[in-house]
Image (cartoon, rainbow, N blue to C red; front, side, top):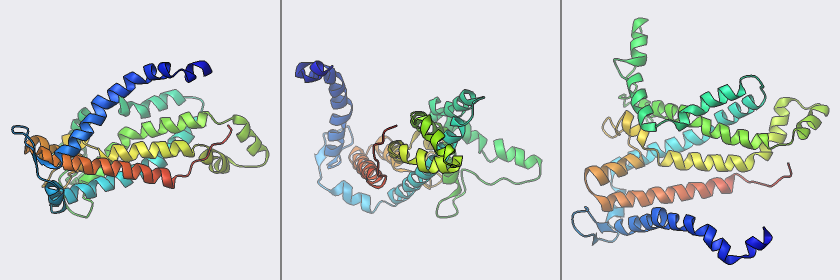
Length: 294
């Protein structure tokens, strides 16, 4: 193995496929988007360089402000709730023997299903005349307009969509934490129990410090996923009513593929990229990680 690692040709051969895919699928499109963000471009005529005009337009875009607020809400909600629920479910399932795999598969199942299909399903469930409201009507309760109420700073449809997103993706966080917890030596827990520690204290003083690197990884994935959240919200509300449930990804889609403002959409994409990088760096800075022998 050491001889192979010292062979530069072997390293290049092994890295070449990944580098080629990264260059053509990710790096080149990013560079093109950055270039188009400085252009007036509608895909029918050649790009016309306009400097910072698109970025200046972002400042006065009222819909962008709503989309940014909603994306930040999703970011905070996802990181907090998935951290708490993911850790709780992981700790719960690692301490039971019977039915562990069954419950683990049930919780993780929504992660592998299509978000677009689930968005349509939940749209019918929260429909004013179907689903939950139909059940509430049978017991004499008038259900709210789950996906159309526009009252409040964070409107009801955003809470509903955030709850559905938590239901779908909490299994991913749970699996990451379970994988890290399973790597912790049982002798550490046995020693703590001998010293009189309860399971709660063992979780606090043994489990949490040892899984902190995975917490940073899971929070980064949750943050990036919440900022580029698109398919489910688009199928549930399409950004409505009156753009109140727009997020950065849906606003980008509307500007690019509905109004053919590819230059302006690229500027939104660059803003989204910068936010993802900034949040990831912030999480890695805040969540201090140390390496322990396990």
